[in-house]
Length: 228
Image (cartoon, rainbow, N blue to C red; front, side):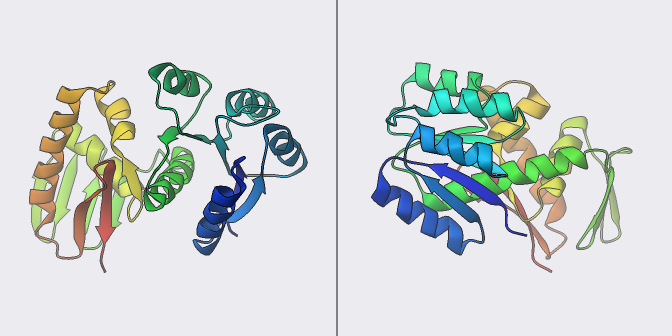
């Protein structure tokens, strides 16, 4: 079954184009053109994720998000806006946003982020999984052991947690900020550079398996690509 998206965007031309793009990528999209209509759609239907423009007539995206969260506190929300003021971004996250994207943006990146958020919800339910068999690797995160073909490695704690996240998101987008918050507990220049070092270490270990590759995605995150 396709995941259902509530898209609330007052620019009808842009909204229609974005709806079509998401639809051809196997999402079922309902488009509303103002906040009040968006709230009506949300109360009458079921959705897996919401995408709200911030500056809208009748009810802005922040007010809409507050109303929606009162109905379903766990619904994922992405804000779209032409404003990149720090105060707006902070307010969006304070309201429980999963992401805040400024216009103009790369629609492919938005698609990756939507999939990552939905995957994150799914992996939260399966967060207790400790063993992974992917391509020619066997990874036991409880023991911090990685076997690639016939070679075995003992992973450091951060290597272990990072590989576990990648395995949980295999073939899907894993956002940098998710890993930084979950593993390093904070986001800044130094933790980001530290994560890049650990990604490089994992790439070196996994290169023995031609069926796996860790790839960068627009500088925003990574994918554990399973080729086989």
